[in-house]
Length: 361
Image (tube, rainbow, N blue to C red):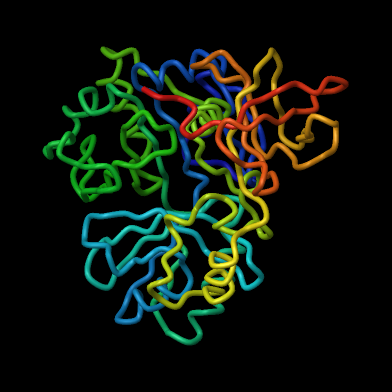
């Protein structure tokens, strides 16, 4: 089991630690609902240093990225980031990721922790045709997500740049908490604003300490992976391994907006054909009409009790106080406002298909 550079800090704070993607990670400190509310209303900090980072450089860097990712990375300018995915050759998704343009001919790819080796192998295979400079720097870097509506105000004393000027999916390489050349990125998977801070492992303790020092006036708290999951689900953000995987296409998952057919990419012809013909199943969002908690892998059934799909992600929404979830159903049953049922033990609990996000600020 790998540790992050902050594992001892989490343990000292009394975090409940669990194995996650091969790492010893904090799942909660005070409890998921308290931590969830902290991020929705104030500011909280996640250690997400288990995520993977690949540097892609050289004259062929963009060509390689254009081939392996579904979004159009040629649109990126320095200081901009883009959500994308790595399609596989059989219609599914290798991983979802964020692509950052650091400088001309240099990009940073941020991938899911559980997929680091798989992604590296996949990208390297295609790089044989391009010869880009590809480096896996995952082991040497840490990542903090400082999230919540008070993040900008709370963190401003730690940097000389204007944090409020960094737009969503933009970033700056600047000083932060006494460390030079830190990536300060207006990204995150909570839907409540804030930043992600990329730094070297040997720098992260100083940054963590200073973040909590200046954040104390804002009642800043450390946040675990359990609240990260409820926060991202309220926004309807896909989780790899649950809502998207090697056999779900980006079009089925509602990720057509990051699938650009203006360029040639892995399996683009087959996906273009799928777009033309229409998908047979779709990822939908639903809210329970009655009490209950939908869980991952629960059956989705029609009014006659026939199985029509499965729940890919589900929880009791801390912000809304009701059961919410995502799951795949046949396209003809995917209309907003449509009625489905979630099989929770012996009860088929009625639910309504809704438009994302669940949580509206």
